[in-house]
Each structure stands twice: as structure tokens, then as C-alpha cells.
View 1: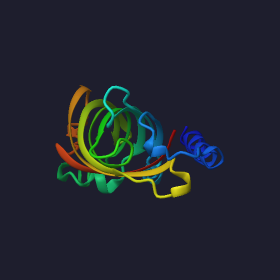
View 2 (view 1 turned 135 degrees about the vertical axis):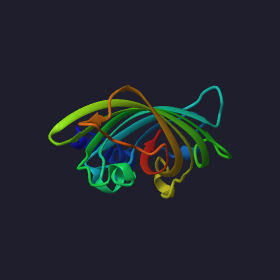
View 3 (view 1 turned 30 degrees about the vertical axis):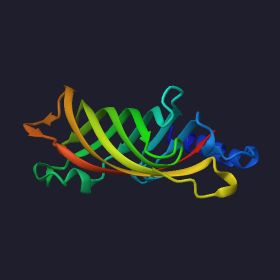
View 4 (view 1 turned 120 degrees about the horizontal axis):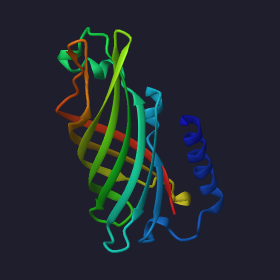
Length: 195
């Protein structure tokens, strides 16, 4: 799945060079965005998001996405209660996005909200359990189109503050509880193509 998503994104980005329109992409008020966060691949994961410029509010974008990763040990053990307990964890999430471009409809500074359902699968002592968290992330970002001749390609770094609540399942094995932060800072670096 990870390689398929990466191949699709690469094909789209390469196709952008061939099909770039003469007009500036960011000046079109209604666009479709396809993006991924390549940093997730370092954690044996993948991400894919599709967003759409709103047709009813010019600076608004709405979207959905998927995300999967294996949580690194440094993240797991950032919670003191998890240290030295041998936890392993992975997650799969489905995201809903709403972003507002502060000045220009398709570039520049954004404020946004992401609401996600994350299924965590955690294990220790050769046992696994699963649970689902509802995660809300308030974020600020900057959508930048660095290549003048191919303005369809963009980078979108953002940082957010997240909080989450367990809504189903269990995070307990043999009397030990897997903990995630109540609040966390979430950075992302997305790259994509819009048309």
C-alpha cells in the first residue's frame, strides 16, 4: 500500500510538468489538491490527502486523508509511564480537514482544524490490543509554491496542537496501560499537486 501511494503521488507530480497550464495555478479560486507527507515514510508509514478549494467561501479548503505509521520508540517512551515496558505501537488514521487561507485563496498562511479517528494497535509480551482515539488538531501552516514555472507543485509545512480521547477498545495488557500524550505538538511537511 505504501509503495502504491508513493507511486501514485510521483506520477501525479511528474505529470504536472507535462500538463502545466499557462495561467498561474494559485490564481484559480477552485482547485483540487493531492498531497502526502514524505516524513511518514521514515516511520514505515504512508499518508495521502485530497483537499478541495471551497466553492462557497473563497479562502476555505475542505479535505479527507489517510495516515499510517509505526510509532518510534522515542515517541512511545516520551510518556514516562511507557518507559522500559517494551511497548510497540502502530496506528492507522482517517482525517477530515478544514483550512482557511488568511490572505490568498490558494497559497500563503493558513489556519485549520483536523478531526481524526486513529486506530492504535499496541503490544507487549507478545500480546496485542487495539483502541480508537478521536483526535482534534488545531494547526497553522504556510502553503508555498516554490517553482514559478510549475505552480501546481507545492509544499505545505504546518504545526499543530493536538488532543485526543479514547472512544473504543482497550490500551491495557497484563495490568500495564499504554499512554499517549493528552496534548502534543504535531509538525508536518506535506508536498503535493493542485489543479
